[in-house]
Length: 196
Image (cartoon, rainbow, N blue to C red; front, side, top):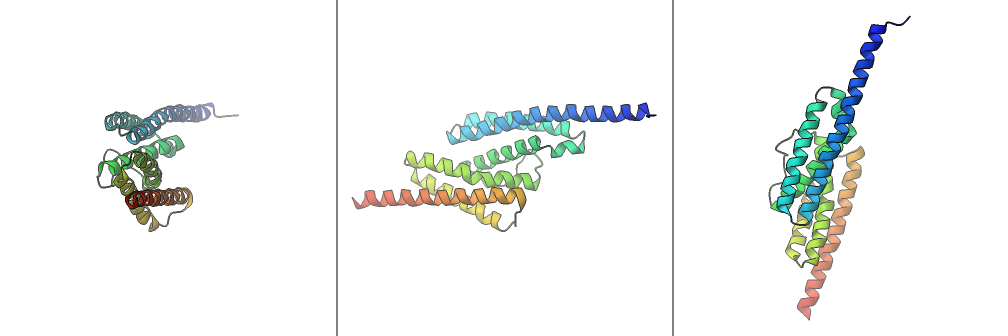
């Protein structure tokens, strides 16, 4: 014989968790999409558009955090962590382009692993921005992108990263190498134009 009250209580807990998990996945997906749009706006030098996307993404992340706070298991939900990481990447990329110090994310309490994951993606964004800058003949901006990416990698080297963040770090180093190539090619073209 089964204790029907006990099984009813377990069922209620599991169904409540599943419902909140679905809500988190939706909210986090919206937050992540907004953060991606912010990065895209920054790549186009649309600061105002990026700011609007930051506000929307942050609002969704705060909603997600409120839902997740009801059950500790939900704070580790992959979609929520991915959205936070994308937001970190967007904010840090904005700090780079604005000439601000790359540092803390003011409006959220970010887990260090999520912060590092987002930071590791910034050199890739800097690479894309450097390519755009090179085509627009903004050569000083190309060099700035390289210098910022180099500083990021220098900081990350001392963190003894493992697992997921080690893979992200390896991708960041590859982005730095690509940036180095862009800086080299730009400097060669500039030298050739001076020589002629």
